[in-house]
Length: 343
Image (cartoon, rainbow, N blue to C red):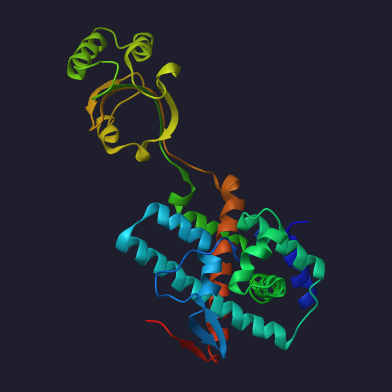
């Protein structure tokens, strides 16, 4: 049984009413207990960022949940951009933790049974998402930060309890009618349109370190002359196999079913108005010259409502559920005492 189904069962038990069929196996937003990023010099990892009805939320609480994503950001950005993206991520996480703490207070005020086995199952999930070799290894890595096995279990219990309440008080009350599904489909045809696709053969002559040696322009000129004389698929394929520096040269330079709008801008411009069998080039780019032969074009097409119906319903249900959860979050915050200790 998946965690999503387990939570649904607990939610139904908590509200004691029949529940809706899940359109998708939505998994709970479990904390990502990955290795803790090293804070900036002078930053205390136990610094209190927020208090929620007197309960503190520390920097450690935040980066325990953002650690995995912060590593990804560090691989993409640097300098000021990395600082701003990391700050944005941590602030969003702070708000999510604040809401979760407040919802958990509702659970503690009116608790329901959460089987110990489900807590253990979620702890096993924590281990998988953390990348730790075992539960023991995870617990050992967190002890220096004051995260005891008992606290880890409490966090798992909190995660389950909050998700159950969200499903019971929010998701369970979301209804999507057939009329809404059809109206959403008609209002947003761009969402349900398969984009125009193109299949190409590509012949690439690198500017440097290519098969043309020291004179790529001469090679391009010679290829253009040959194609002017014979632009057939057979001749184009021969030239690709003999001369191309492209990664797909050994397969004849073929790329099938690429979205036209996602091709590099130079290709999109060169292919305007072209049809199957047409050859264009040389198309000049910083790293190479390209010749393109159009194999075929699939025009954009709208997916029939009969085929898109289920996906439209699921997307609409997801949107309405997110809105309901946002309203719920605002409600639980109304009478809470929330103090921030950062700018």
